[in-house]
Image (cartoon, rainbow, N blue to C red; front, side):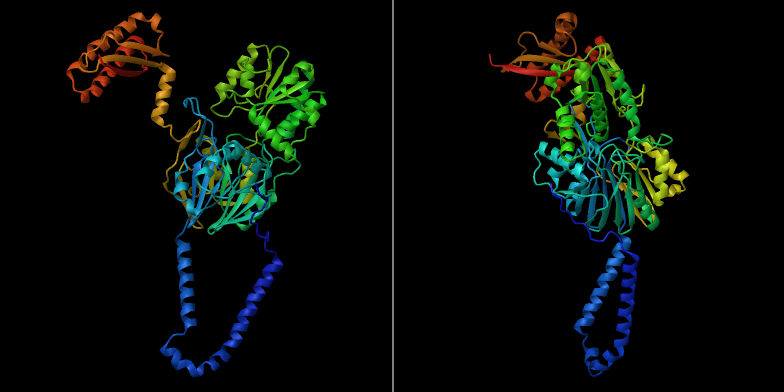
Length: 627
């Protein structure tokens, strides 16, 4: 990771500088005007020659003028393209392409965790086919903050195309850790600070300090040939942030005063009225539950929510408790945050889980992963009694997070299991144990007021949130024709005079299964879902190699469908059905065997569904025996 980036020296042109430049231009013009008669006098004797043969200087000037005219014409035709490859119509895998002429940049490159209908899938990332095909245009990736839904796909992206990545100190440290895990080498990570600018082709991007649930979050002001684009990243307006550094609203107002062509804004909480409360507010809730707890206090939260973890640790230490971190990502991220100075916990207050047996329960605080009910997370394993920490009566579990859409069932299951083990459970429906890192409607209104955009594109949200945000934009005076609610892969073209959706590019999701990237498609998922729901019914058909005659009885193997020994009648009927159809092999050519297998599969499917109302995957296997 390097701290060296290309940052223009000037932050902004001051009035004095502009006046000097204007005065210099006027002086130059006066000088050129004053010398023109004298120059004509000197060239009088060569006028005839000049008329017969154009000078090299005149040719060069004409050529330069033609090039300039061509460039102006080309620029007039070019439009800025904004292409969301993720993060719209969904919560997660945020990735947006900005393209103008021969230059392209990317904002964020995140992942999303699989739904329940994706058995066996570990991660889901954006389909980057369009970027791969246009990799020669790519000038860099700008990262707004270090959450997984904004950085999680970077290791996979950087394996496909080399390009510089820009982010704040913690963001780059978290990216670096992910790249090491995926063994991605020679990545060009560039650490920036809020207020820095980077030049990437025809794009100039300024990083603006925002407030979110992780340190180092920034918005982007991107100056393009057609105008300025503001991308808010994930943000909320917190007037009393724990790091003491409020969002730089003055910079948003500055760009608003200069003219913002388009605003792309966080839509996560666009449905919710009012303001998001400050992170500081939940400290009182933690104090209350630590005060009344007799046994261990176990707090589950997002591993990247460093501000939350600091608050929990501060409260725990004030009540005389030691801290134990559980969950791989929790251990890794807190280590990185502590090394960079974002997390301050005395080393003597941090203990390993093995030492907790020797410490009184009333002196223990465990901070763990699993706030989303993720399988194999720390809290999940505690609830299932598969963790080193055996939770039960006397323990208090605080789930300091709200369930991300799609995770509600998993969270509810963990809560129920904890209750059944005698644990006191506190979650967001019971008390103020969580504060969102995303702006509500009044904060979104403020962003419109500060930036005064001509066009609006809501991002970072499901369809309902994007449309709610679009409605809010109309309330704030933006004409409906100046608002586009984007879809994945949609090409949004804009310039100073208008905005429109113009076709789409290849987009979607790429599924990660272990080391397999993109090899799992809909057909495999369909088979997996069918296997998980109705199981597998395998029929082994032994045939004489020379004649194709059936040898003995077909063998039935059932997995996840029925237990063979308790379904003897069903199995016997299936064998008889297969035995009758298998007689066709003896009289058929080998080229016809595939068709007979399909007939067996179809007949068994109908028979099994008729008797069980279930449709397992049916797998006929022919074994040829040389006898």
